[in-house]
Length: 389
Image 1 (spheres, rainbow, N blue to C red):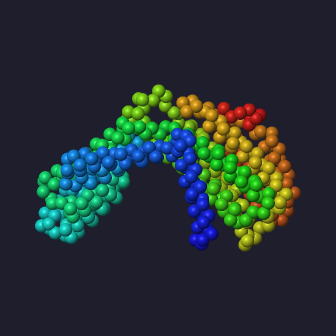
Image 2: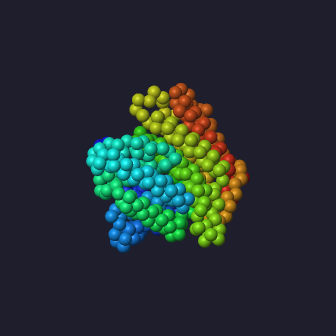
Image 3: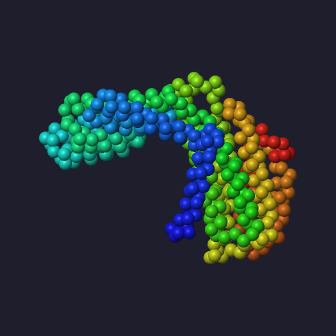
């Protein structure tokens, strides 16, 4: 990566971080939830150290904040599950280390050679999840820093238990995470980002656009795929966060999950948008054997792209205005007249082409038609009049 590319990457990352920080202060959502969970994890670790290290003077108080930090998880259910997993893994690691020290008569290197291989292997067991790693690290602590006496082993369990109780308690009773709204928050970004990208492409193709621009458009479309993946993850987290969560009793109304039909529709939208940007990126390559359809075709395509961007913007506005506790209501809408006219003009422009320029034009026309069909298949009924017929 050269200096120019590094500079572009740095500017994009800085802009993204700045946008995230502004979102944290401006509105509730996944970004603010992440900040809250991070502060809770730090607070739980400090409280665990204060109890185990400062008050109880535990010989290896580090285990308490270490455990607490790991157990402030995305959901209360996940914290409880991870706590049980971690206690089991740390028990296994401690007993394995104690056995290895006894067999080697306290030889550190020999004890590591005996204890670590099976513990690392056991740590890969999928039922243990991310907690499997702690078996080997606990064994390292026991082998290198303590003795293997029953009293020391008891201290390890006490320190770990303190951290687990504090971590789980903080996660469950201090602003317990409820992710029911997160799928909707992330879904809201899809029409917003899709509309912005369509407008950017429309502006670009009306003039001289470079391969670098086209690749940036394709990268944006692929990032929309990541947003869609986050919607699915948030949906699963929302369902999981409802389990064993005392925070739900403190809320009068629970945010409804967006219907799965929206996931299906936006999957189709993003698939066709990615195909459009891939065709544009291919056309922009200098070694491409196909001829460009010409500025006239791209002017007509840009008009249709802007009309589709309006559809996305109206849907974004409708979703943004929806009350958090209001249900999602979907209905199929007819294609707006201005969109229909723009498509017919583009279709006429395509049929006037000949030669190799018709090949990429046909791809763009077909994918844009499918993109249009996906955008009007099901939309929130709160969308302002003018989107439908």
